[in-house]
Structure formats: C-alpha cells, structure tokens
Amino acid sequence: MPAVTRLPETHRASLAFDVTVADFEAFNLHQVNAAGRKARRLRNHAIFLLVMAGILTAYYAATDVLHAADLPLLYGAPLGFALAGLVALEALRPWFIRRQIRTLLGRAPRDAFLGHKRLEASPEGLTITATTSTTQCEWAAITHVDETSQHLFLMLGNASGIIIPKRGQPQAALDALRACLAAKAAATGAVEVPA
Image (cartoon, rainbow, N blue to C red):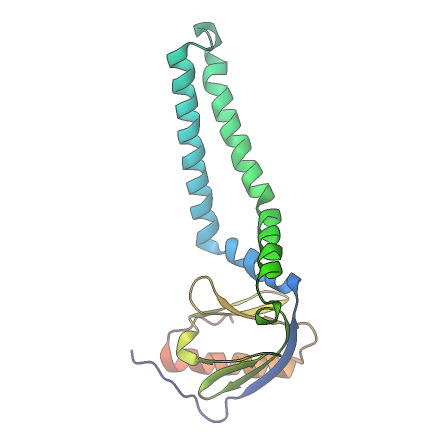
C-alpha cells in the first residue's frame, strides 16, 4: 500500500512538554519489557545459562572433582547456579538500564534528549522543536504507537521513538494528537494506534 505523506488540513495538534531523565528511563524500560522482547530475552538467557551449567557439569564429571556419591550435587549445583543467575539478571535489569542511561546522558549532549520540547502535528508530519534543534518527521516514519498511563511513545522503528509525557497535557491536545495518529493509521494501515 503506498504511503500517504499528507493528512487532511483538519488534523493538527500542538503539545509542549518537558522530557526528564525519568521519562527517558521509562521509555527504555518499556522497550525492554515489550511483549516479544522479554520472552526472547528470557529464552536467550536460559539457553546461555543451561549451556554454561552443562559445561560445568561436564567439567565436574571429567575431572572427578565431585565423587560419584555426590551425583545430586554434581547436577544440582550447576542448575541451581543457572536458575539463580537467571533470576538475578532479571531482577537487576532495571538497575542496569537506569545506570546505562545515566552514563549515556552524562556523555551525550543532554539537550538532544532532555528538556523542553514542542511538538507540532501537521498534515505533512511532526515537527519537534527543542532548545537547540528542530527535527521533522514524516508520518511514514512512525511505525506504531505505544501508550502507557504516563507516556505516549511514537515509535520510529523497533528501538527509537518520540517520548511524550502526559503530565500537564490538556486532554484536548492529547486527543488531537491521537486523532492525527488515527487518521494516519486509517490512511495507510501502517500504524498501530492503541484504542
């Protein structure tokens, strides 16, 4: 289906908001825990840890570190370590992500990610104005929309997006943006917009 680059003139929205470190963290945590990603990550971690447990068990068996009488320990210890490792990786994941984000924001120009932004939705697409830059994004670039109780994420592919905090936003402005997104979805069928 061909991409529609313009929407009717009636579809316009304007929002002003501040993106904070907490908003940036919320976006990344939302992405990490997205439907298919969490299951895939758990599966990959489980496979890795089970392979490591198998290698450790083979090492124990080959070197006779544990005697034949200790068979439950021979198989149980590596599997126990693998299970504990899987639980620890998942429990510490939010901390790791927050730490990586704070490191990234400490190195990168913070104005590119954080601070006051103004979003204008027009028939051509989105214009995001920050203190030091202006970015234009055509409607065709938005692949889907994720909405949480506190944020609206306009996804530009699988891993990047536009973070729109809902706090302090008039409901009419959010509804106008949703109407623009729904019109784009109806026109192209390419965007998944939450109901």
